[in-house]
Length: 441
Ligand code: ATP
Ligand code: MG
Image 1 (cartoon, rainbow, N blue to C red):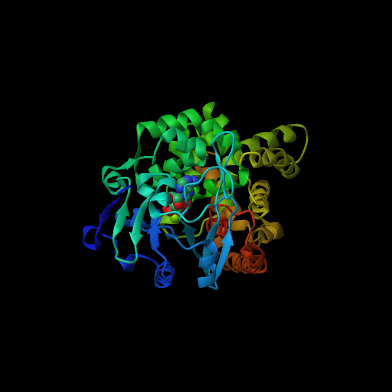
Image 2: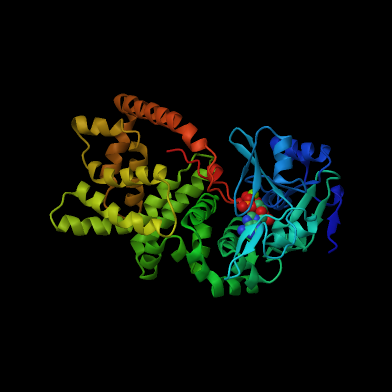
């Protein structure tokens, strides 16, 4: 397979646009005699003159050889073994070229045609390229001569705004159905148009997503809703009927024409997109709280009608609804706990007077609960006065002091939690849960 090679003066990628850490890894591998390339979103986004989210590296060094070169390196993943070179919060993912292989040692394809393991090393750059999902994701920036290597006309497809699978679209979705979600994400984020065979493959094989482990789907949800293009991703998920695999409850409401749910989800995703544009922190629990709320409140109303008070009714509703979501995508406790708190605080926010209101302001979860109240108001609930009075309470000197106290408490909670969250997890797959999962409450 002969690639097109664009020399350094035929493309716009410059080393100053690549993170220092990624350059360090690229150079060290190269100096040790290995080939080392920037690949994936790092190259694709730079060619589009966008800011890459992360930098991925491909090399002919085995994961163990990578580990031997970097003391800040750990090996992760079973299905797809990788090296992570860790620079504080910044993780550079280094993947070894895979070789073409038959069934057996190191590689496996399940009965359904799905790749369950891909760990036969010793491949060439061409072998590596053919395993990647889309033509625009198989572009390599060679640190040795600063050229861009393109096996499948990815550069041309970028120029044409096309999202094209490498190889047979049907086979590629069967091999890994998560690629259907990746297609949506890249189409939304980069404004690319999926080829017809890509759309057809998604439509024909999307049901395979129901067999993907909930933990992997959770990772994909984070990437979709925290891409800065959550609204566009959501629209495409609906268009291709993929939402059912991520948020089955919301999906069936939307299919029944539930306008409250639709408005709330669109505004919630819109808020997240704006925060990302403004480089403000975002947390996964907010968007989960939004997607599940219409079902939680409906279930709570049934319990209230049975005579329960609003707070216990919400607890009971959450106990019923959250497990239904967990069957589709997981949601780690560190997110589901604050999500539930935000729900249960909604009726408590009705009380804007006296000691209780002050306690509320110093609750570390107050800001999230208040934002959620405002979202409900924006969705059309009659909560304007309530939102306004919490808004003005927050402006008083006493309110500011209480909020400050809450911020300190939240920061100290995060500090005590940090070491546990930073621990490498055996469950990690190709996606990086730690990087994408860092939401700030
Ligand atoms: P971004 O990081 O901006 O979300 P990306 O394209 O870099 O997009 P990653 O998930 O970081 O996506 O993966 C890096 C590269 O690894 C991809 O560009 C692609 O070449 C390859 N890759 C990742 N996941 C898959 C997959 N499921 N199937 C085939 N190739 C994949
Ligand atoms: Mg990437």
